[in-house]
Amino acid sequence: MTNTDVVIIGAGPCGLFQVFELGLLGLKSEVIDSIRNPGGQCSELYPDKPIYDIPAIPVCTGEELTQNLLKQIEPFDYGMTLGEEVSALQKNDDDTFYLKTNSGKEFISKAVVIAGGVGSFQPRKLRFGNANDYEDMSLHYRVKDSGIFNGKKVAILGGGDSALDWTIDLASKAGELTLIHRRDDYRAVSSSVSKAKELRDSGKISIIESGKVVAINGKDGILEQITVEQNNSQEEIKIDHLLVFYGLAPKLGPIANWGLDINRKTINVDTEKFQTSIEGIYAIGDINFYPGKKKLILSGFHEAALAAFAIKQRIVPNKKVHLQYTTTSSIMHERLGIKD
Image 1 (cartoon, rainbow, N blue to C red):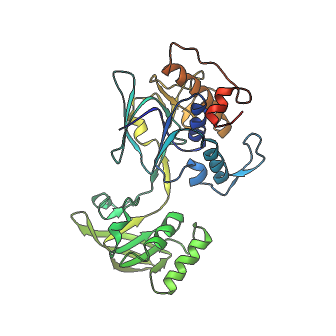
Image 2 (cartoon, rainbow, N blue to C red):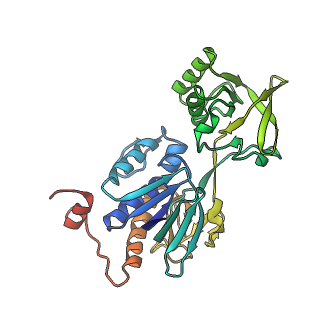
Image 3 (cartoon, rainbow, N blue to C red):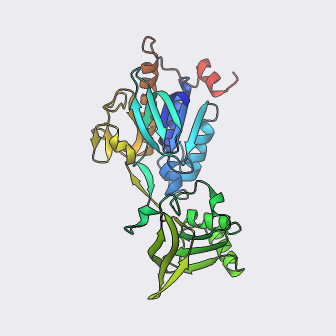
């Protein structure tokens, strides 16, 4: 069980900046995100695309923005749990909050900030009617323990970075490995594509391009073979495990079941504290809604600052929270690790 001042759900730019604003006020944060790396949409969807509307930064990529934010929060005491989703959230009788992730990690906090962007990123799943029968046993959308693939017959579906990264990683571990991509052009970085093709040319893996899986078969949750269609012909491939990396789709996920005031796929908040309909739970960034809302990163930064002051006031209700400037405040300098 981890005890903290604030749990932040979402490690995108707004969630990371929330760590900073809370840190300035002497509050500790724990950040939880369902994707494997910090940065949210910036790192997952457009890491190399330029962003032009961050104040005082004429241009930066999504990845550069993420790295700068991570650098900015280095002085503060915070934790980060990645690749896990908050599956349960409830308010305790003492006005604290209990949160649990899908892997069983538990947190107690005095406040919660939802900075989930457009929602948690859920894997795009196979649409076969029986696919759920094999999920997490021999059909995988995320890799939790790569050791289970050692010496096994493995097929990987996809042509993006995740598919190619795991193809390269498992090439020397799996007994047999086949990469199956629906096209002959890839979304992954060119160096990974070149490496995968080198592995194919050396006979270490097989690659099927312009092919698609049309059926999966097995019993008792254990896959035995898949049927791949290519150029109007079908081929049966025997497998032990199937890894599917067809990308991620944003969904509210468990957030929709937490009793919040939902406005379509966003959460209604006030514009003083950016608090939701549940006292002590706040929402910032693209996931919130209020009259005049603009889905901009800079708007989320503003929301994070006001939410931080509201949270501090909630935690110390009998003490006035004063605004202090980082340029002159010795307290701010101490928290930032600056020697005057």
